[in-house]
Image 1: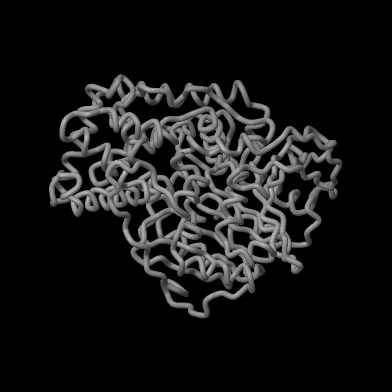
Image 2: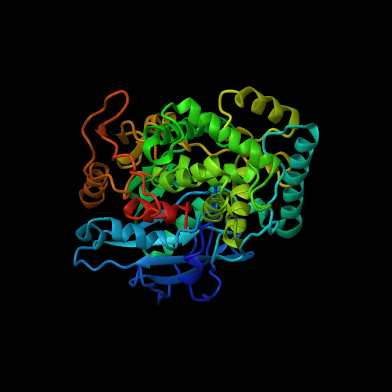
Length: 521
């Protein structure tokens, strides 16, 4: 699952014209077919994109009641042989999928992409869908209280900040919050399938998108043609337990970054011992907590800045330069620039976070007693100090959420066609155990493992071995034949990034994919 959403909707906002369709008059449980009206909305990067909108019931159990609008995009098929729609989702919850359609269509082999209508969409509440949530604009504006509570006052300030966000969400969007959850979005997917006139859909989901796909496949197994799930959410740990386990895994990814910095001591001059580099990084966090850079980047903000490095190692060179500049001479300019690129939240990020909390808080049980949260963070922080408290405050509105949780949906069926799962063994956001659990739950599914890899979102990101498995599956339905305890096929990870002194942002397929997934700009 994806946490930071600062860049989710920047491109998406430029994609979609305001198209209005008449309200759909469907009958439960499935909506009536509605012809989509597609309009060109191409960009310089993705000139073939088209856009449309679809009305769906706010409450699918009351199809004649209030409707909301979903924003859709597509890259239409060009081949004579058409395999139907391939829906794509970047995760979140709260991620905009409009631009992901173009990224996926460009990333697949041309002959495979040409056979599909690649369909992106903004889920309910997100981006260009209406209404779009924004619970408390500027919630992440600096400076925030320190994440790691040095005093009781720090903790009280963060608790009140989370409570204020939850209260504002209820005041501004209380009418839609009961209908922002994974099951409602799954039923939206079924409405999209119906509107497309497709008897079955194919699906590619990343991060939270794997959980969305798994719930859809469990509920509508006979509507699935092919389903590929990349960086898998544990289906039995949604969501409080998943976030606790994420802390340890993300801490390991941060340590991998620090070890990479140590291996490149000739460039960054922070020492060859990873422990020494780690001490320098945590000293930087402490110093910035006391004296924020430019009055803008304190301890919490520097955590936000380096967190995307736990998802994609292509950002490591940029982050390492900023770290080294501060560590050697107190130069805060590169660090502030890195914060503005990776950590700062814009309006699209406010929207994405609002939907993230709305869905996660509604989807399942969360502790309501803050003493339980405090005890868990204190237990984990000594061994996972990178983002344990930061993650807690990110999710803390769920302790005060104004809408009660729903019942977590069942995930598991033997009625699906073979589902292909992809997972890096060192993924920090969705630890490896989740892929094994979903492989067991979905009978006939197969797992392709990037052994030794650590990125979150591994297909269409530069690993040719993984991409060959994905392309073959989408083209022919072929899956690996193995059924070993840990994997059905294994790919080696791609090479670690090389330092790029002074050369700025990452480029290439990995950067394009992870930008569409919501990290970096």
